[in-house]
Length: 457
Image 1 (tube, rainbow, N blue to C red):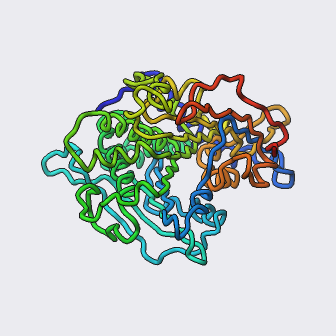
Image 2 (cartoon, rainbow, N blue to C red):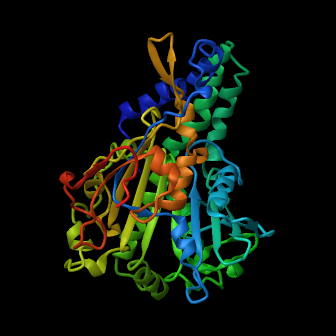
Image 3 (spheres, helix red, strand yellow):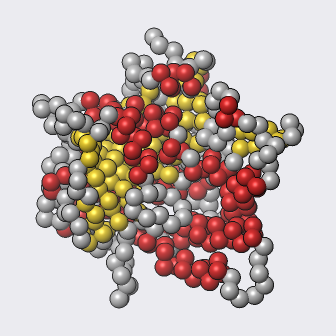
């Protein structure tokens, strides 16, 4: 499947993205550092506003584990643009586990080289869909268990990006100025991922996420292979026996958000077709009764929707998601919670408009959107005339921000809110729609502003 973006979008990416993301960091450090306000000695005044329905975090899943309910909490991480190596999410994971009280890590790290016969491989082409790095974490009493699946899909685009390495090195032609050379190198390492995904890399990259999600729902820790190249569906121990009881979360960054939603929508389309695979049919039936959550850092869905048609099935939430909907038995899942984090100073991050889910996301996944707008980067004043926030930090700092970690770990509900979120965030609550399986069709008038932090009832 090939997806095209309009030329103005590609021109914007090519010309302005590297300047703003790469250049501002260097300029801020080298030119304005001496005249910027010294924020480190001041109170943290970065804003945080949550707009949407209540949602649960990973802790609620962990706390519901017991001998009578022997389920596992599973988290799949999907990165965005630029080259990544396995282990890229280590700092994020450590902060998350500290918040959740998971102090023990299994000594074994399972590493699967992903493959899929659903990809149209060319003769002699290396079957490379990336690496899935799997780790297991528990508390000291071994009562709560979390399995973390870190996907690195960078190898899919690496070969095509090699053609720009010579340009980055710039051995031929006139020398570049130092700053311009850094900007060009940044462009060559990041922007191609967007272009490859919109072109001939779409099938492989979505297959990489699909295979990773399959491993997440198919097996428990003991059933997973420890190493080697494998296909989830063909792995002898892929029984999907714990799918119904386990809880599943996605954590994505940047382009990874678009890739993950595309993969989920592909599943909805495949699940809606007549097929003769009894295993896939049985998995689809179980998934249709489950609730999933995807936490999107530096969400880009509105930007990357440009140039795309709406899904074949859209604006039909009542038909598929209502308890008494005439096609509720054809939904792909009971509910998909979409928690979209964005920094207004991140030039490649966007909140989701109120009607985005209804118009631009497949109705069969029953999406429920919560926007979280927060300042990741500190805003500073230059010469008391211009305010400035580093857009590079605003785009890449989500995984180390305490509020982001806290909301992923704990969510926000009337009976559960941490002191950090109570103090630092304001919640504009969107009421649940009682007649639907998911949360759709609630008018803007249902929002209830709660200034000064979370309002305990």
